[in-house]
Length: 121
Image 1 (tube, rainbow, N blue to C red):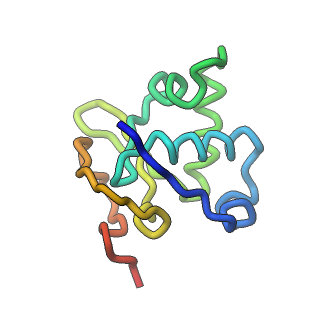
Image 2: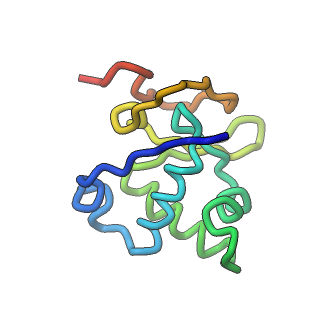
């Protein structure tokens, strides 16, 4: 499925990304591409590694370390449903404009997220 995602210029200097390592910032951008139209994605290290780094032979522990680094900023949130790990971007719809929206088939996260088409005040 074709997806167009936006990386705003403010991403690079934002407080969320300022303290991230270079590799964690690269992973964050990859996760933006990996996420569906509601900002959700499979959160297993294997799924993320296969999508974001398909041409690299990276150990899962290294990718997990970067994921934890990103989670600590609040940029992404990890959650579980029926023993499967998922992730989401809590402010996804504040930052992405979806032209032909397809509702997520992944379970809803256990935290509130910005609803589609409406920014939180």
